[in-house]
Image (cartoon, rainbow, N blue to C red; front, side, top):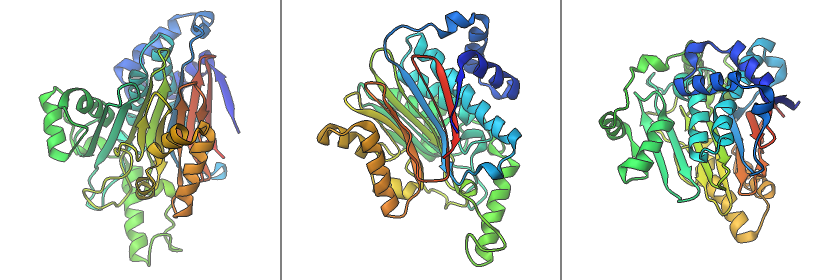
Length: 358
């Protein structure tokens, strides 16, 4: 079921549902500024097209297995991310700033597999990946196997803008972060009991005869998840950002599609911006994010058709997941081949749409 909320209602829900400590300072300022203005001013936008689309991961997400309270928590978290990005775009800010801000909000929320809510490796550690790309310049930054960075998407942008490289990983990436004033956090910052129990369940399932055995049922949400955002700003520039903790029980050093430019993240002003979520190995093999852009550029496909064709290709080789995308005209696509995907979008009309189930 699609739920569409005007800004002032979504703002109220987000404020009531979220502890203040969970909001990054920049997002707090956005919320306070929005609350201080009247509804007429909030809804006022100029006629230039802009839009933001976000996701919090795709998988087996069934209405009957989620409490009303937990569903509201997810919706409120997605709402906060939309508010953070929308406020930037509405004021004429860049798509890069908007996607980064939206992803940082979700990284700070333990409901999602990114940042604070990252899943555990088979060694009981957390390793995080992220990427960001500027559709105007085709500059991109990516980080992988981070263990001490609270907001990987922030470091990915630093790599893009200050390192002279596209991708950095592990200790080298964290040394670069420290040299640029980024605070390193202890691994215990990422710990959540839910993710720890998911690792134990995965290990027990393996012992009992394989993942998905009768005794220990392992769901998609136990295994993986990703968050991301794509945006079009008033200047016609596109951007994409993706962040993840990877897959539960993954081998140390495993890297999925999220930080792979053209795999899970891609942006090009001539076509579209894409952020993907799902079975990373399959999305890498299918070069999902770039393939959507290529179908538009070389075959003249519309965004929705191209996005669905690429996702169908993933399904044919056994992969599940979804993606969010926006093109240079502000059209959006949110295809997925699972039972649900946490997702939301907002455009120049200021109407926030948040959806979870198929």
